[in-house]
Length: 87
Image 1 (cartoon, rainbow, N blue to C red):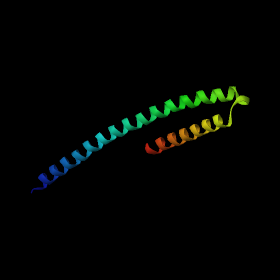
Image 2 (cartoon, rainbow, N blue to C red):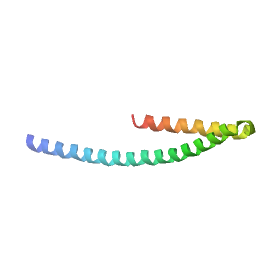
Image 3 (cartoon, rainbow, N blue to C red):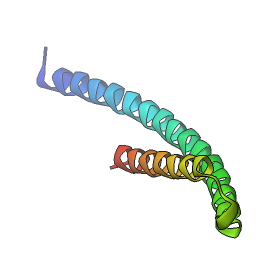
Image 4 (cartoon, one colour):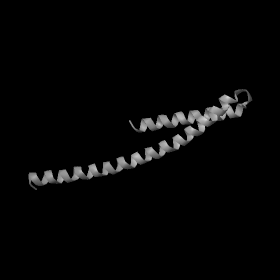
Protein backbone atom coordinates (compact mmCIF):
# COMPACT_ATOMS: atom_id res chain seq x y z
CA UNK A 1 0.00 0.00 0.00
CA UNK A 2 1.40 3.37 -0.97
CA UNK A 3 1.78 6.33 1.34
CA UNK A 4 -1.03 8.12 -0.52
CA UNK A 5 -3.33 5.12 -0.04
CA UNK A 6 -2.50 5.05 3.67
CA UNK A 7 -3.32 8.75 3.97
CA UNK A 8 -6.59 8.29 2.09
CA UNK A 9 -7.50 5.38 4.36
CA UNK A 10 -6.61 7.44 7.42
CA UNK A 11 -8.67 10.33 6.08
CA UNK A 12 -11.70 8.08 5.60
CA UNK A 13 -11.35 6.69 9.13
CA UNK A 14 -11.10 10.19 10.60
CA UNK A 15 -14.15 11.25 8.58
CA UNK A 16 -16.08 8.25 9.90
CA UNK A 17 -15.16 9.09 13.52
CA UNK A 18 -16.05 12.74 12.90
CA UNK A 19 -19.45 11.84 11.47
CA UNK A 20 -20.17 9.50 14.37
CA UNK A 21 -19.16 12.20 16.86
CA UNK A 22 -21.43 14.72 15.11
CA UNK A 23 -24.41 12.35 15.43
CA UNK A 24 -23.64 11.70 19.09
CA UNK A 25 -23.30 15.43 19.73
CA UNK A 26 -26.67 16.08 18.10
CA UNK A 27 -28.30 13.35 20.19
CA UNK A 28 -26.65 14.72 23.33
CA UNK A 29 -28.01 18.18 22.56
CA UNK A 30 -31.50 16.78 22.20
CA UNK A 31 -31.12 14.81 25.41
CA UNK A 32 -29.90 17.89 27.28
CA UNK A 33 -32.72 19.99 25.82
CA UNK A 34 -35.30 17.44 26.92
CA UNK A 35 -33.81 17.42 30.40
CA UNK A 36 -33.84 21.24 30.44
CA UNK A 37 -37.50 21.33 29.40
CA UNK A 38 -38.41 18.90 32.19
CA UNK A 39 -36.50 20.97 34.74
CA UNK A 40 -38.20 24.13 33.55
CA UNK A 41 -41.63 22.58 34.16
CA UNK A 42 -40.49 21.61 37.66
CA UNK A 43 -39.12 25.14 38.17
CA UNK A 44 -42.50 26.66 37.35
CA UNK A 45 -44.20 24.26 39.78
CA UNK A 46 -41.63 25.12 42.44
CA UNK A 47 -42.05 28.89 41.92
CA UNK A 48 -45.82 28.57 42.15
CA UNK A 49 -45.60 26.51 45.34
CA UNK A 50 -43.02 28.87 46.79
CA UNK A 51 -45.16 31.93 46.05
CA UNK A 52 -48.12 30.24 47.72
CA UNK A 53 -46.03 29.28 50.75
CA UNK A 54 -44.57 32.76 51.13
CA UNK A 55 -47.98 34.37 50.80
CA UNK A 56 -49.62 32.08 53.35
CA UNK A 57 -46.55 31.44 55.53
CA UNK A 58 -48.45 31.28 58.81
CA UNK A 59 -50.99 28.78 57.49
CA UNK A 60 -48.42 26.55 55.82
CA UNK A 61 -48.16 23.03 57.14
CA UNK A 62 -44.86 21.39 57.93
CA UNK A 63 -45.54 18.85 55.18
CA UNK A 64 -46.04 21.59 52.59
CA UNK A 65 -42.78 23.28 53.62
CA UNK A 66 -40.92 19.96 53.41
CA UNK A 67 -42.42 19.25 49.99
CA UNK A 68 -41.32 22.65 48.68
CA UNK A 69 -37.86 22.20 50.16
CA UNK A 70 -37.51 18.73 48.58
CA UNK A 71 -38.63 20.03 45.19
CA UNK A 72 -36.13 22.89 45.45
CA UNK A 73 -33.31 20.52 46.35
CA UNK A 74 -34.24 18.20 43.48
CA UNK A 75 -34.21 21.15 41.08
CA UNK A 76 -30.83 22.31 42.33
CA UNK A 77 -29.43 18.83 41.82
CA UNK A 78 -31.03 18.55 38.37
CA UNK A 79 -29.64 21.88 37.15
CA UNK A 80 -26.23 21.08 38.65
CA UNK A 81 -26.14 17.70 36.89
CA UNK A 82 -27.20 19.28 33.62
CA UNK A 83 -24.50 21.93 33.94
CA UNK A 84 -21.87 19.29 34.67
CA UNK A 85 -22.91 17.24 31.62
CA UNK A 86 -22.33 20.25 29.38
CA UNK A 87 -18.74 20.84 30.60
